[in-house]
Amino acid sequence: LRLALAPLSARNLQETRRNRVKDFVHVAGPLNVQQLLLLTRTRRAPYLRLAKMPRGPTVTFRLESYSLMRDVAHAQQRPKCPERAFQSAPLAVLNNMTATDPLKLAAVLFQGLVPPINVDKVKLSSCQRVLLVDYDAAAETIRLRHYLISAQPAGVGKQVQRLLERKSLPDLGQYEDVSDFLRGRRAAQDDDDDDNDDDNDD
Image (cartoon, rainbow, N blue to C red):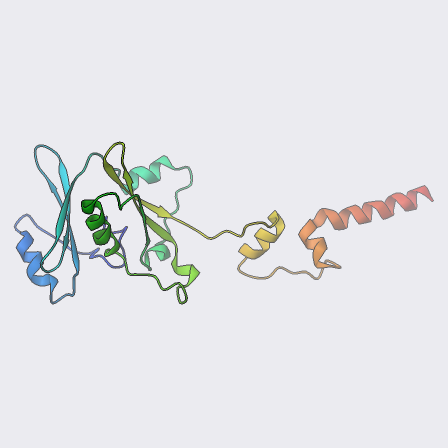
């Protein structure tokens, strides 16, 4: 959960059994902490509390189920978790969070977990993760998902896509035209094969 909200979370915070909620509330002001996420467990179920500092409000969620980050990675064939993706805050995406007043309150608190986006100034390279908050009306549950995203060119061929994904420009000296490169090496080879066939016919 801390990693999902990085870099705006206290990833290196070391808490002990002797710590109480008031201990964190007292240091929230000097450290400019605006919200607290509290995970607790009782005999009935685990709970997540989302509190706005310093005077509330606070919403409490009972956790029906959850998956650890390592469990998700083990389920994937090619898990990707680059450290640079956690250098910028995730994008908050809220779905169906306006049905009732309690949901609207929860939506405001979830939006406060990440900074607002300035569309005119945001860099595409900083948009690498999404924090999805989705309300399922049928099950009356809120799903919190964390995704790693990447920008991909659309409407172009495979060769153009590979060219755009390269970090350095390829050597085009062996091609007569850039279209030969986009068509692949076979285009130049096919021309040579046609010339050889003509020579054999003569």
